Image (cartoon, rainbow, N blue to C red; front, side, top):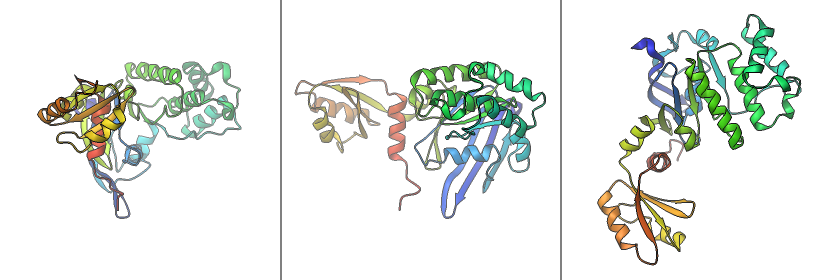
Length: 308
């Protein structure tokens, strides 16, 4: 049902000069869903998010965000969306509390003092409320950014690589908070490069150079790729990798720790390669393809829209 969709857009396109950076994208995100939006740098993810929240106007396409028309109701959309950018964008010479109070003023939040206190408590910032933002570590800056996104109690969060540069514990704590918010009905569209984070999302979409290449649950995305993957262990893996590239059926050879992942869509050809190169003390083992195998494959086969 349409009422179940927080985001329902189709044909969304954005051009800068003669470059199409977002090309004819259709996307539907259900209310209360955590939707992962993945792709290489420069693929158009940030541009797409900015169109969703009314900061950019699409050159083509239509649809709704939180029930508001994307083209004619951008002002209303902004009131109900929390947008967390890639860069820390708060006043570093103001305290955590002062930054949140400033954001609350911008949104015209009623009961501003109570709203700030509520945000401080919800994100575990109360004990640091007087600490200058410029003195915070990456993880605490991330918490401040999320608190600021939530100060006006939005219905949708757009998070642009929110965990880049923070430590593993901060990333884990952040995702626990995101799942808590989603359980309360908040919708989240999040861009990330981390495969473990992609697997935490309810559904995924992968965009490369402006084009939407796949979408679905993690299991559906892996199944749709049709990849066969072999894991190779043993000596001389670097030399083996060079020998394998360009062989029939071999689409990618990627180092995974002390092993290689050799993948392609022609299972029979890959099996023949495995048999041919299984000597010299190396072990070949058929494994399930993972999201990283799939996304590397998609990225390598996508056409760069900025290439000459």
